[in-house]
Length: 99
Image 1 (cartoon, rainbow, N blue to C red):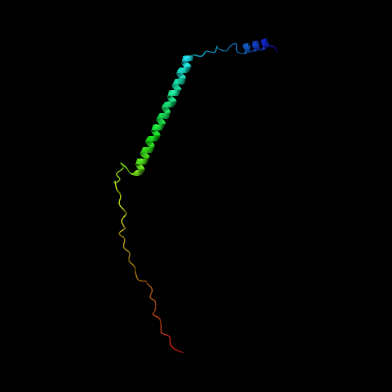
Image 2 (image 1 turned 120 degrees about the horizontal axis):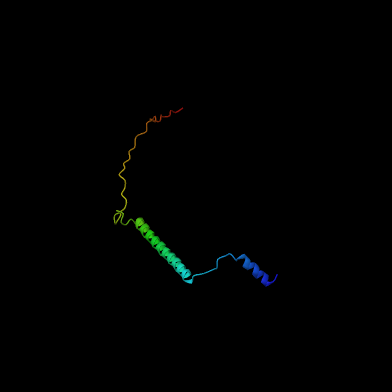
């Protein structure tokens, strides 16, 4: 098979295809648009992450949520305990008699 035969076969295979046209301006515009979208998404995601960290740290530290500025030591609970005598009586020991 010669080069000419290969060329004729390829032309026959793509004869009904539309011609390939590239608009350089359209390709550049689409590339710039995608870059702008990617950068906007990156900046937006970073801002959301920073805000989430700030709010989370604020919540964990107790700021702006009605917590007092200073927290004192815990007080002892006001609990009293009482004891009751046992219910069973133990008989007193009996003296031993000598044998």
